[in-house]
Amino acid sequence: MILTKEKVIARNNIEILGSGSTTLLMAHGFGCNQTMWYRLTPELQSRYTLVLFDYVGSGQSQLSAYSEARYSSLEGYAADINEICTTLDLTQVHLVGHSVSCTIGMLAANNDPERFASQIMVCPSPCFLNLPPDYHGGFERSDLEELVELMDRNHMGWASYLAPLVMGSTSPDLMVGELSDSFCSTDPLVAKTFAKATFFSDYRHLLPKNQHPTLLLQSQVDALASVSIGHYMQAHIPKSTLHVLPTEGHCIHMTHPELVSQEMITWLNRLA
Image (tube, rainbow, N blue to C red):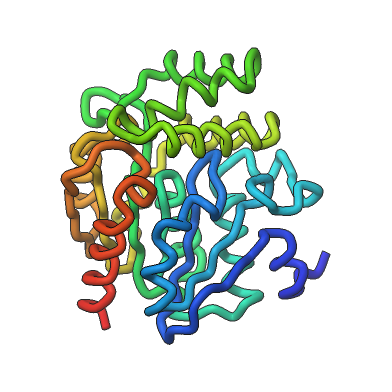
């Protein structure tokens, strides 16, 4: 199938906000969709052009375009980003990724480095597994296998378990509910396939290959991506800057949008 601009816009539910000369492509995390950025967009769209989208299988994307074979690895999601950039003819893109989309963004940028200017990684992790003795990703394989089994047994239950862990203990119930609802609204097959691609992968080998200036925004307390992971990534990504923020939780773009947007604006001003 030939991918036209119109087909990709519909497939990925693309929305373009603002009209600035600098383009930010906003890539959401596992179980989420583009609405998770809405607390950041008012401040950013007054300065930049924002390209928001849903991965195929997420949000309001076209579920009919979903392929379990394609999206059984993060490379399939990276292909979404590359196709969005190509069909919309985006250049000098600053890729803003949350969580697993930081890794997906590295894959996409590695595929087509000339289209990208920098990467902004919000609570990134290249691997969520503990791989002793050199790397502590935060989870034992058995724990993640139990999560996937829970997704099989109780689609609502896994969302209720994971959402508070992701958001952090100090997050308002409203935000925990928003994330849980997003998890629950994802098709069970899509959610399970994306979860396995996210939590059982190891992309640490990509870090030294990253060619672009990279801002790492890590939360001081994060059950999914600890500060030590931020330091690990800074040590292995050549042009990286790490800022550990005085926050709790894995979704700081939702819980602390003013702080995250200011960090992004300051970073982009320095690159200009």
